[in-house]
Image (cartoon, rainbow, N blue to C red; front, side, top):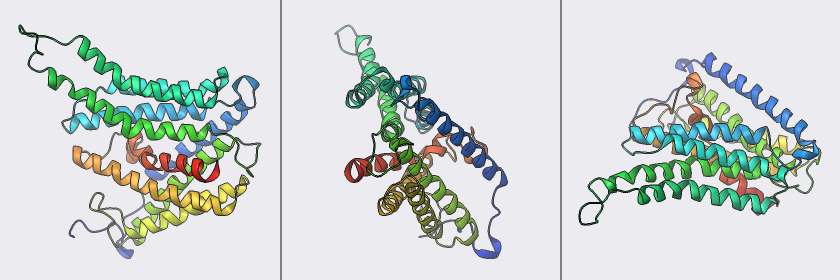
Length: 317
């Protein structure tokens, strides 16, 4: 396999971007503040079981990432409806995060969110069918088949971005886990562990790849190295395990959770890189400077969110 040289090889290692580190620290502070707000609000009886802070943060990130995904698809020649997809994603996730405060049972709230996602895909289709143009013989006019392509692109963006983040929100709203400290909602703790497994691992992979990286990991993203991937997996696993132990989760479960989520997150990162490569883009956007756009920020969660949700349901629930 041939390709560009890896980013780091000792003496000629690429310098670590101070701007990237600064943006990362700022985002970390914002997340901590939102989590603290969520814990405080969660103690109020009217908001018991809801996720007013973290849920709305996930909804905002999802909406921005879904829009960027639609824009990428359009750039790659696949029409989509960015405004509709982003609005539907935010509305569904924001509503799901607040339904428990209205007394809706968790199972019913999850079912409503799933039905809402199906409607978000089906309603534009129904609209195009209802208002389609007809020719003299009653057949669809030229171009009607092509008009359905944006609906397929929109559905793809919702499947690729909204659904994984919806599963992360379901994890955030999960009920108590045996052994975990009940002073912090178990779902909040698990969601934070998932984010730590991805982001601590991503940071470790970034620094290791820039300093000691030698062997390219995958053609999809030639700047990633095996050294960075291993360092990321070790750091992400340790971070999630320690956080879980602090919250009262069995250390073995915490480490296993961290490893599974981190490896899935690295896969999600490569998946987003492949989509960007196919669409001819370096970053999904420029919202966060050198860190890229919202989709670049949540790329690991495209697979890590479902992995964390499944781990909870299969192992911890």
